[in-house]
Length: 102
Image (cartoon, rainbow, N blue to C red):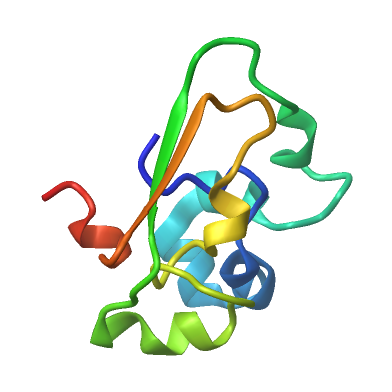
C-alpha cells in the first residue's frame, strides 16, 4: 500500500465542511476522517501479508495540509495513520505523497 489513510486523515476532519473539499473529493473523500466510529476505523486489521510504504516529507503545495497533520507526514497522510494492524512490513521514505510512486 502506498501511503494509505488506514487510520483516517486529519485533513479530512479539518475540511469536511468545506464546499470545495466536498466537491473536489466527492462522496469517496467524506468518510476518510479519523472518527473512531467512522468508516475507516471499521475496516479493522488485515489478515493477509501486506506492506505499507509512506513518506515523511511534504511538497510545497501541501504545506497547508501538512500544518493540519500531527507528527511526520507526506502532506496528505501522517506516518502513524498510514499503519494498519496486522501489516507485514512498514517503510518510511523521504518523499511527499504524490512522489512516492517514483
